[in-house]
Image (cartoon, rainbow, N blue to C red; front, side):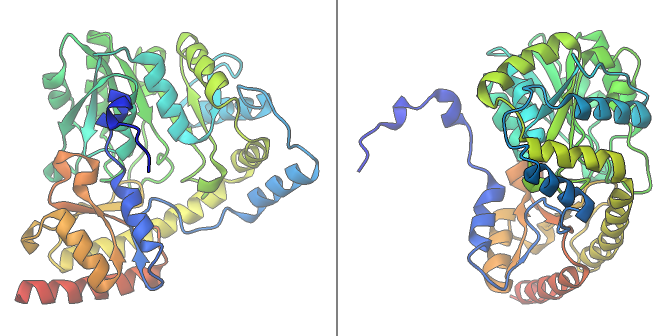
Length: 392
């Protein structure tokens, strides 16, 4: 038995809670009949032409170390994509870094920009890694609650109220995991104005930016004076169903990117060449794949959200991602109790809203990145579960 004392662990690590998502994922892995709506992963397989690009890369022996920054050809294609999508101009040599998923880019941005005691404003609920990465960098998370009546979009006025002399950064999920919120343009304009007025940096996680419904994705980096103070993070996992390839990128001002590169160089070294070759194919020839998958997510979301609303678990209309954030307070259960009972009694896995922040209490996150018929069956099981517990 280990005699190592917990007190020997770093204080930063001890502040970080285990992921609420992974806990339920590990349980569902042991249940053969479970319908898992818990993990934010497309159920689609990476499109064939992208897989083939990866296979070709391996067959050609492209299995050695590559440039720490990522293949120049890929960075050039990323720059062209950002110019085409957002009219943003980035130098592939000095302002773009290929990362091991957006998760690495987020960690690099936090460690590059945050000093001990710096405050970071972020949405609540927000992705589980946000607070953890801030704490591990020595910063102080300042969660700003979001509300269903505003479709869970973070608002400039509430960010303004949270700004203090110690505020260093605003961290945005755009669109937001877990709520699916898309920040309206007018709110982004207000947030940008705050960043300029208070000399703040913005880190914008835009990994779900290709998955929006009935609206447009607007990057805060496109606002006046914002490209020079924004770290834009994006990747291939969600848009192209490439989660296992672990490939993303960061676009940032040169002075920030150079420092992110230093940490990346010593900690991760480089993204896998095979993943970069696949990503290059995705950018060049994958637009139809994005549209096809996005349209299917929209179809599933309409059906599933309507079903939850019909069952008395109110949800906002999906605006982005493939998540819905369902209000379960009418059941009389808290979110942890609801999730555990639903999993063990009906074998449907969802995630407690409180895993994403205090404002998520009383909600559960459901992913509709599952086959249509599985979502229909999940609604049948949830209805049976509700009838039993509401009658009790």
